[in-house]
Amino acid sequence: MKILLLSVSSLLLTGCVSTPLLVYKYYPAKATAQVSVTQTIDCDADKHLVILNTPSISSIYSSDRRGTPLEFDASKLGTVFTDNDFTFAWYDDGRLRSLNSAVTGQGEAIVKSATTLLAVITGGAAATDEAAACKVVASRGSGKPVTVVYERALDDLTQVVAPTALTVSQNYKGNYDALIKVVSFPLLEVKVDIAVTGNPILVEPSASAGDAGNEGVPLTLARTTVATITVTKGKVPIGKSAVIAPTAQTYALSVPSGALFGKATFSVQLNEAGVPTQVSYGKTSSAAAALNSASTLDSALSPNDAAQASALKAQADVIAQTARLANCQAKPSECK
Image (cartoon, rainbow, N blue to C red; front, side, top):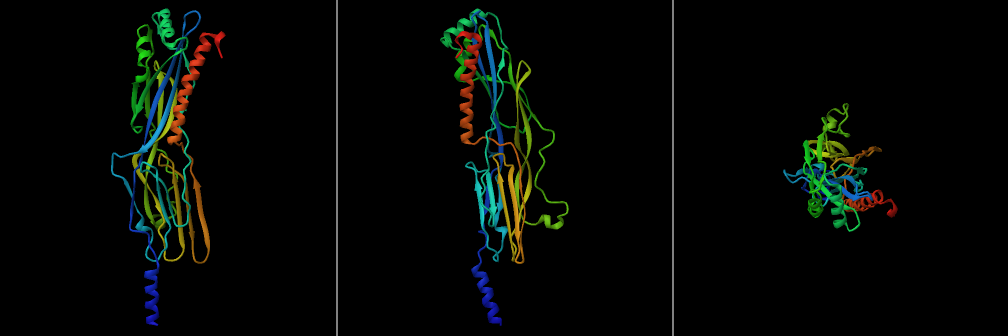
């Protein structure tokens, strides 16, 4: 009998495979934004200026490399007596995309553009000499409206930003420099307000979990807040957008570790802001199988490369359509 027990023990030790002794590293996300105002200038038949201002706010997520990366120790998920199926996926810049342990499928977060194209705002310039301004428009536009784009990059959406003037994009300085001599444009500014309290954590241990709520391997995720970006013209708001902003504060989501008998499964999918969009837990035993729960969490998503390309196309469309609108307002008979 002793020989038999020794043989079985040897078989268990050599025949079972544990999770490799690897520590997975990943970077938390950070939120930035690009703010712009497209200004289209034209003149009507009576040589009066027609000026349209179209604000646009585009949020962007990337990995935060200012600190050390976060870590997840996969070796703690199981022992030599467990078989583990584990997948860890990253975004291209090192942010965590999904984690799947046991038999759960690899997740893919749905990414949507968070570009905000706001309503066209008409007016806002007091011309010292409208006739002279219209001559500039005619000479630089060759019969078409003249465009000036103002912009400002916001590099940290976890910090309050006092009203800050937008600057003229380098590609449009020629138009601006020619017009500013005869036109007094209103001040275009952007400000950022941060929510007083952070976003609630939508997945956390139940109060009745007791010690069982502490089991598992912690997966560190960033807490988030909401940054409200406001664009103003002459101190009057003309556009606003709310963006989810990851902060330096963290919390832990417990990934269940394996047991000698039975099986525990876990899957989490994250959007580009690092917010869980789907979490699922499962547990089976040798006696019966029971799927615990799956929870899908909604949050604002940000653009990936394709969405940012769409945002650039949207800005080009804004320039084209505002130019058309300005022309229609200035020259109704030529409106097409």
